[in-house]
Each structure stands twice: as C-alpha cells, then as structure tokens.
Length: 189
Image (tube, rainbow, N blue to C red; front, side, top):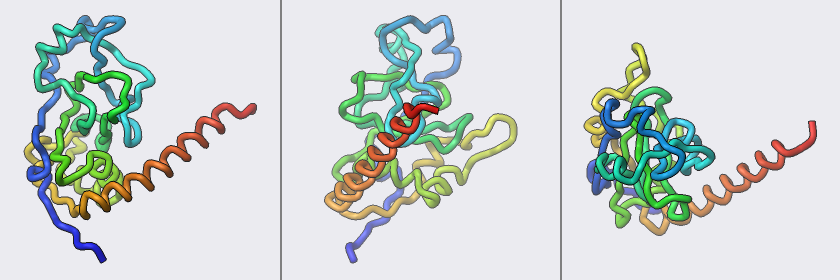
C-alpha cells in the first residue's frame, strides 16, 4: 500500500483570493465580449463549464487584480450554492476569467498536488463534508470566513504519480458520462 501524506490546504496553495466586493462588479459593467466572469452555472461538475458568460472589459478585469483566475486555478463557491468546486483546464476557451463575489480561487503548488485530483477529492462525500464543515444555512447559505477556514482543511495525498493515475481514470470515466449525457439529450423523444 502506497504511503499517503496529510496536508493542510494552506500547505498546498501558492495563492488564495476572494472574488471582488459586490460594488466592484455590477450588471452595468457587463458587455458582449471581453474577459468572462464566472458564476454558479460555470461551476457545475469538475471542470469549468463554458456554455455561457457575462463579460467585462480588459481594463475592468485588470482593476480587479486578485479576482482574476487563470488556467490551472481552482474556483470554489463560498456563498449561495455551496459545495461547487472546479478547476480551469489548460485547454479552456479563455486564458483568464474573473471570479464572482460569491467565489474564491486557489493556485496550488503542483509539486505537491494536481488541481484535478484536488477538485475530485472535494467532490467525494468526505471532501464535501470537509468543504462544508463551516457552512451556515441561515439566510443565504455561506461558508464562514471562507479563505481562513478552507486553509485549515486537511487532505491526504498519494504521490504525484499516483494522483496522475487516479486523475487519468476519473477523467476517462467523466468523459464517457458526458458523452452518454450528450447522446441521451439528442435522442428523439
């Protein structure tokens, strides 16, 4: 049996940042093209869903600094639909995105953890329990002090090589499920 090592999330991240304050990104900032803004519908499943976006200008995105997410980053919802966590794949449609005020993002130390493995873990029952352990259901569901509490969550990791093997298998299964769903959606009723 391969040895696993337990880490706190804070030992795995290179950077963590909250989305912009609500007044920094209003509906009137949206335009027909530019830098895409992520919302809950983009955080469905494991990988970024790129079916639809609102956009802001490049200048607006630049002004939001740490609220910009890039390929390889992990994005997590901390208010509203809790438990959403995705990674932005290297082959995403855009190089840069702006996260919403209900999200935070991580850049992981890829010498220790593969973003895809990290996200798959947090989709397991145990991962969801750890992710949501500081959630409040009063009013709008939210995670209390999201970046502070998430840093303290523990995760057991196998070697990078083992993580890659696991991700390869899970990605293959995920791709097959996605293909079956598309086929089923296109079948005549």
